Length: 329
Ligand code: ATP
Ligand code: LTN
Image 1 (cartoon, rainbow, N blue to C red):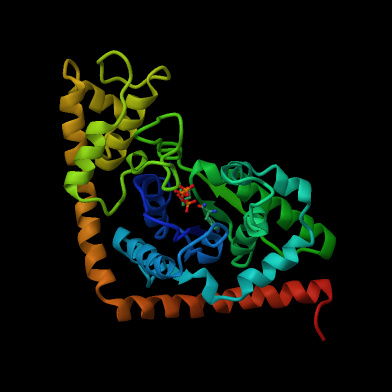
Image 2 (spheres, protein in one colour):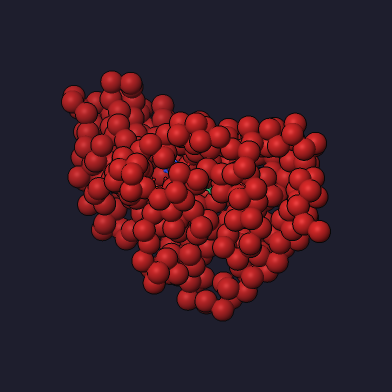
């Protein structure tokens, strides 16, 4: 049985990196597997400060985007993490088999706590990967489709599953990360050495999935380029390589074909075509998104149904886990 689970934090705008690195492959995968579960991980989002009103809006917005992208709620389960108590409960239990040293080595914690200091980072931020392991392990997940930056977290989930199994007997399925090479790491438009990110200092880093045509075209115009003027990918040309990758992803054509089209042309021509390609890729998604977000009752009904279906699986796992450990009466 193939079962996939993945999630995105409702902590701000969803950008093209999230979309191409995660959501795009979810849509393809949902029809190839036995079970697909996509979660809006709001408990993860609060590991850094969030405004309550904005968080509420962002939760619905991320869910609407899953649907607009083509996640089908009849095939897949879509739900909001905090509506299921099993996640926090299993995270607590997994905390007891997790080592401080393991969490100290997580690069996301190191990066994010550096923005403040380790002294003032929340314990939740430190514990973030354990909650993510709980998300994954509750659903007997076999594969976790994510971007490259989450590989280390999925490996921790594997280690915790194996450790628990050897301590208490076979309980958890050991999951694998599932990472698409082509779009594993979309880089920032303003700095091609850093991943495209919503929490980067500048909004020029990312193209948001909901950006309008003018914004997209302006951001692409201002995207940094490399020295020289050839439209060719290469390790010495990180900026143009990234733009070519994006072009390839949104048109489903190979980088080599696109390079051939732009032989002898300049960055200006290339950027104009790229803007058009991104706009025509995103506009049907944006149209669907508008319809879904304007039907809040319908959206909440889908999420309530997803939460109920998720609960049926998660509660079974948790009963089994507690039994193995000897918890309860
Ligand atoms: P932040 O920008 O605050 O670090 P984020 O943009 O990484 O957050 P997440 O909610 O942490 O957003 O990630 C959601 C999914 O998108 C994950 O599967 C992650 O691997 C993927 N992802 C995020 N950024 C990129 C990127 N630049 N390229 C490819 N995939 C990405
Ligand atoms: N940490 C992930 C979001 C996330 C997730 C998960 C992804 C939380 N729980 C479970 C896959 C499976 C991120 O994308 N930053």
